Image (cartoon, rainbow over all chains, first blue to last red):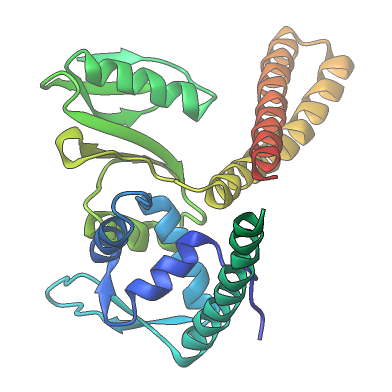
Length: 108
Length: 171
């Protein structure tokens, strides 16, 4: 399985936002909200990331109603969940090792 | 209001369209160097210019996606698109991380490089014909194509510079 390690912040948060069906605008909104405005994703960045993840099959098209031109929704796939879990594992390790710095600073 | 301009760099073109917007002129259309503006509230819109990956396939997909994301596709010229969003709806920047900015400039570099190669071939053919025939019309055409080749070459270098600067920011 090809993965980019570590995931870019955009990829990480997009994967998170499509844990349930979500559309472009919803993804941008949710990421802005949960990062308290620190990460505001540009629509061009989002478009590129979504196409890249669709071709890697990390996400899939969830619904597309051609007749009423409903907003396209995306959903994470099992492969996407694996990639996300792997990244979370890496981040946990990073965070755990970061404690070494705190512990050291407390000693001195 | 209509204005005729020739831009070879999308960043300065974008700056100019933003300047017009801030003065109360909202960009509405583009055709062969002619930019159409309509009166608006000063600074009502924020504009961005983008280059599509593949103009046959993703044109419709791209526009629909942008509209789903709350962005209006104002005009399109070949693979170039002009996008806008109301300023009151918050900041608007198409590419917000270094990775995707690099991808965007690489796409532009490739775009200019392909035209550069084609124009260079045309230049060579015209140049040889101009030497052979010594026709004034051909000489003028050769000089004009030569100028275009230089501008395109300059554009490719500029894209390279921007990519390098972004890559440095990375580390």
